[in-house]
Image (cartoon, rainbow, N blue to C red; front, side, top):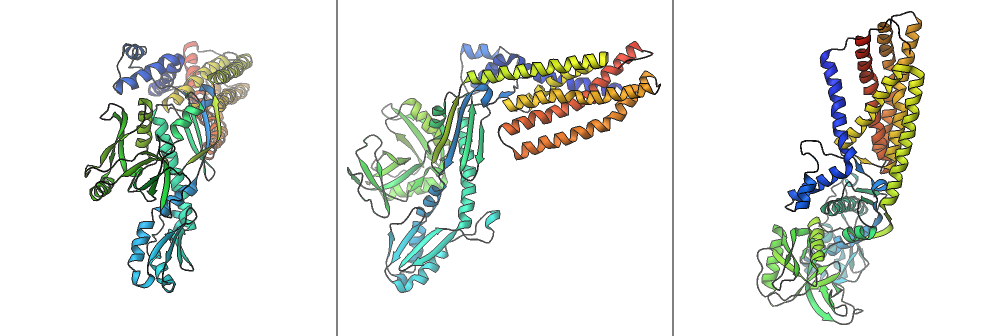
Length: 553
């Protein structure tokens, strides 16, 4: 057992060296972070002497992965937002009107004339002139229902159709509402993540909480207001036919229309058809640019279906105005001068360069499917983060020093070897965290402190077992061999249960709990490795060099 093969020694030393190599950049955090930022900027096309100097501050052949600092260590913004899921129901039902109208027109001989009525949000109400044909009308609309594509809605249809007198009432079925909620939340999380990633922030935390809430934590960003400006706009771009203009914002637009204010003239209102010709969901690209007058603007381009609808509408409505609406405000209402077949255009308005750039980012990332209401917002300053780092350092140093002194006093030279392995263990933990790009939080530091205390447990088991074997009048080599051999099963069993606990915390938990689970789980792996392999290798090398006749543990 004490005769460790050369290949195994090389593997052990190589793994330790690799872990320390990946941990090394964290000792030069600011320099490596500046190097990484400069490399990203240069790859994006930026050039300047400052960027070149920052890039050269760290050798490119060395690892440059860092342990990301979480919100509680780096400072940043924290938001808790509520998603208005009811808005999605209303949009779905509003967009259904053309299909319902066409389906009932095919039954005109039975149902008579049809007219859309004012109704509650999320409900489409259509009145027919011939009440005797209500059953046929309901059946015609029910034929529009589609099977629900979700595990919870197998066998269900997406529309619920009923009759109330001479009215046909259409709503989303309960199963479709559940499926819509799930899709909406997933889409919201993805769009927020894409918008945050556009500005290059590090390791944001974007998670669903409950049925209709989203937790957003972005380290390193200036304030909660800055984060809200980035993600708080739905950026819902739509193109509507213009019915008329008015100065009376309280005017009833009619059952099939909406009234929106003008972006530049708040006293001017446009009455538009409720159903848009094209929506921002059919955008494929948006880039900041300048219009023919040299003012900031945004170029956009539709996908194939959006380009076709946009082209058909402009061809059929030359000379008519149409409105470009962004989040309930009319940006522009130009008159169609010619057919626009290419599916591209330009949005011009009273923009600054920053506003046009941000609008392009929002449109490119996609429209949020529903409005967000921010229930909680906090800006965590870097001073608080530095306090947390300092407190974590003190806790680690105190725990580390206590363990080192205890092991040295209790086990002498063997305790010193265990202390060396403990130092290597902490270095390997940071190396693994850097390799996987993990985020270190204050609970994560607690996990490291706990690992420091737990790391010596395996060595204590081994050394106590060696003591027992020495009492049986066995030689030093045989006692060490049996000590490692007989303590190994107890070490593995004890650490497997703790590792499984860390896995459960990671899978079931969120935020700080997962940060604690990551450092605890990685710490268990490295502590078992250093106890079973690294300390054994150091003891074997010492025995081969000194060949003692007796040993004291």
